Each structure stands twice: as structure tokens, then as C-alpha cells.
Length: 483
Image: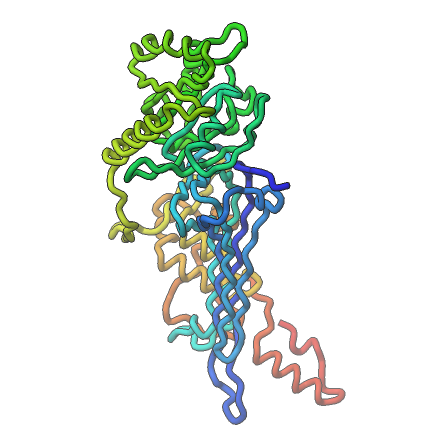
């Protein structure tokens, strides 16, 4: 048996970018072929897509974790790694995406509407892309970026023009079944409607949809009954209809008290999409007038309800009396609402160029460390994530990039001294302004950088000498080649 689920929490993880490749072209009779390391592939995105064939969030209830594939690592011979595949998650029309603290991220309405929930990480550049006049054969490549991760709340809010409200067994399901082709469950006991039902209704040239939500009781906005779970399905409705049972035999209930109770619950409910439900146009439907006592009661309370400024219609779903008048009355209100609604514009691409005076980073004092600083900015933090700190040449390249960006200059202006603690992203280090950012840098062995004090990496020329020495018996002395 299928279940209706209209609220879930999902955990999404985009794919990680592939690492770049550090490779040197090797070919017979061409010992110095130059760098040919390819770039890493981009990680896959996690995308939410509206699909009209999906009507519930049930799949996410059982499988809340969604992960896209990672990008592949670059290879030699200038071969770039493959990009990770995007993961598309199909959601129903009317799905609202929220953060865990209730902030609306996106309102997904309309077939094909897309939202990138998590972006895949960028692939790292290979050493072929990093080559320059100063570094003709870089001995390093950039690492791939990690993909975005996040937790989101998905809420399904029905896309309907008319919402039916009423106490249990007021006749809402019967009304939507006779006005449309919907087949809701109908029985002679309360709370037969456990999930929202949608029906399409035609009134002349006007076609609109109607939503029937489970019955409300006093305290529904506070979690009593089923009302709190399904009040969200009437947030988009253009008009709300109070379906009042005039044939009830419950003590202490009458049409006026039922309307007052429902109005109080609407006033207490706070829609996540904004606005106020009490501001929506409302009609009152006095149902079950096929019962003589109910007809008399409807005629008695009708003047009092109309005195509140509410339009009143008397119907019977059993004999279908008054249904035609109700259909056209609802169609007129819906048309009026659509006429006042601003015209939907096509999606436009918005370009936000970086300001001329935008340095791309900011430097703040570290509140937890005296004399420390925190550097914030998308590019510096991305460069930190892409650096292989086990490679001295890669660290030197990072220092050059930060210096060219002006980070060292700003740190000096803010009073940074050698040995000051500096934090960029997840990296904490002691700042030493002795690493210049000169373009005409001293050429060193691959993977090394003489500007860095701690450099215990064996260079290529030393490895070559060791290799030759090992081939001469009795001549090799390891101490002769120690740094």
C-alpha cells in the first residue's frame, strides 16, 4: 500500500573534483618533452527537478541520502579526467526547499523547474596548465575541490486554486468527488481523509483545481488532530471554502461556532511561504441541506454569516442541489484572483560582475588568538583546498598566488609580525614574510622550492647520482649523498 509523505529531510552530497596530474612527456629521443599532466574532472551536482509524474516524497522518506559521483583524476599525455555525473532527484510540483532552521531556499513550481542543491567540486589543474615562464615544468598539480554537502527539508504544498476546510465528516471529500473525477475515500466516520486530494473542475471557460485536506479540529495549529500536518497544502490557494455540516448532532456545535473555530486556526497558522491565510477570499458552503432540519438551520444562520461579509451557498452533495451555482461562484473568484496576480515573467539570467575595488578577500583580527588574523574569501579558501602541502613546490606556488593577490601586503598594514598566526579556511599557519612572490624565481628540482626553509626533499639530480653510484660496487657510500 502506497503512503503519502509530504515532509522529509534529505542529506545531499555533491561529487568531489578529481585531482590534477603532474606528469612529464616521455618519448624516445625526446628526454625533455615538457609537462603533460591533464586536469581533474568536475564532481557531479545534486539537482532537484520538478516532475509532474511524482506526487509524493515517499522515495526520500526511505532513501534520504543522495550522493553524486566524483570526478576522475587527470592523466598524462594531456588527458583530462571525466566529469562526475549529475544526480537528478525528481520532486512533485509545489515542493518547497527549506533549511533545517526553516528558511525558504526555493519554491519549486512548474514542470521542469530545477534547483542545484549541492554543487560538485572543481577539478584540479594539471601541471600542463600550471606551466609558465617561471615554472616550465611544474612538479605538482592542484587537488580537486570537495563537493558541497547539506541537509534540506522538503515540504510538499499542493498547487491548488481552491482549498476546502471543515470539521471531520463535513462532506469535503463528497464535494470534491461530485465536482471532479477525484475518488477520495468516503465513509460515515471521522478522519476518513488522511491525505490531501486534488480535483480538476471546469466552470464554463475557467478550469481550476480544488484541494481537500483532512478535517480540522480546534487546536489544529498546535498539533492536534491532522490539521497541522496538512494546513501547508492550502498555502497556495486563491480562495478558501468553509464546508459546514448543517446536519450534525454533536452538542455544542453549530455553523457559526464551526466557522469561528476554523478562522481561529487559520489566524494561528504561520505559512512558511509568507502572507496570512486570513487575508484570502473565503466562501461558506452550508452542506447537507437535503436533510430538512439542516435546511432550516442553513436558512436561519445565513443572514448572520452574510453579515460578516462572507458569501454563502447552500448545497447538497447527495442530491447535487446548488453545486452548479457553487462551481461558477468559485470560478469567478479564481478568475478575479488570476487577473490581479502579476504576470509570470520568463526566467532571466542575472550577471553580477565583481566590483572594480573588490580585492576578493578580507582580513580580520582573530578573536581567539592575540596577534592572529583570519583571511576570508572564496579564492584564498579555494586555493588552500587545492594545495598539496606535502609538495614544497605546490606550497611555494600557493604563497606566490596569495602574495600577488595582496594578502601579505594587507597583513603588513594590519600590523602582522613574523610568526603571527594566520588562518585561511581550515589551515592555520605561522606567517613568515620571507617568501617572495617574484616572477623570475630560482629554478629548482621538481617538487622543491628553495624559498622554503624546510626542504628535505631529494632533488632529481641527487636521485640520478645515487642511481649511478648504486651501479658501482664498493664505490657507493650513502653518507656522501646526504643533504
